[in-house]
Image 1 (cartoon, helix red, strand yellow):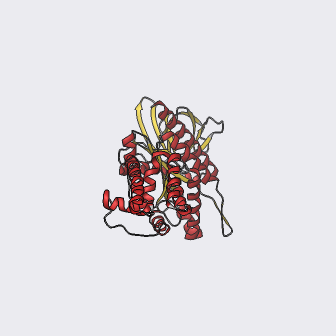
Image 2: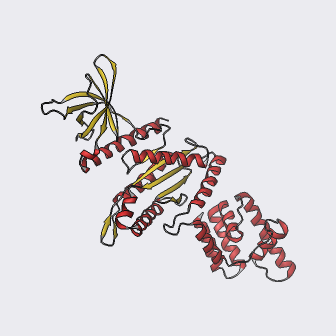
Image 3: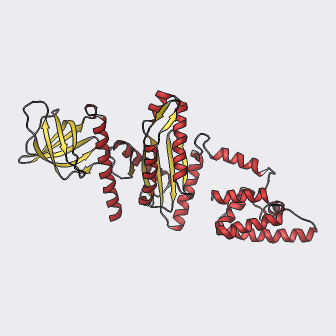
Length: 394
């Protein structure tokens, strides 16, 4: 729609007279189809008209234009004809105001867009989401919503100042504008939260865009006053009508998914799930090696893994471990390089003879940054593969 609007505005500025203007607008209609009619009327009158009704209005206005020119014996402008039609015939306008279009467009842009990022503002986003959901309902189409949040953004503001934070927000917004499709709608929801509406798009295709944006942000190196700023972004993904049937509910689902992405180690995109646990648990159907660290002569034991998340790991053991015991866990991966996890026993449950569930809280403070990153990436990969398998099965 934005491209059609730009084409219409260009015609208004370039046309030598109204006959040429009508010809130019008809060329846009021939090229873009029925969706061009409401854009033309919105530019010329600011009226919101459905495509089918707008097409009928256009034909009547062209007839009215020719009739006025003939009856008055002089040229009557298209804009004058439109004003007369909507004031005297259709009566959609009661008190029209004459204003230069470029001045009006400047005011419209200021009211719709966030001045820092160039994305739509919150109010315009709210209106657009309701409109797109209503359209999806009418035409029985999918719609997805991506909810992004910059990871550890406060750290940038605190260490380099708010101007640096503004530069980061602008750079991330530019990535989103470049990567999204023409029909997608991107907005600044508030603070460092950015959103993208994807009309006629299911969750899997929306994930492709979300991942592309996430990777671009992760690879970005922003130069600012002698500093190189690196950051990551997390995202939550929800879809209409699978997850929610209204705009408010869809936003809440996407926000919950974002919360899950943050709890899963950040720098990832998470699908909405009705599971309200902070950390998404992943099945761990493989043997793990356990070694108690409280005593030097403790030998490594083999236990059966059950599930794992970024906050902890659960395994089955044939003997209990005291609460608070510090352990090292060796978790094999499909890539061949094992994960070495440090943690403390926080849960012990008996459910059979020599059968104990041992819950470990991962102690990230005692692990180096490289291993933390390895664990987060491995969990993200497994989680995304499981989510994709689940979506395809559905």
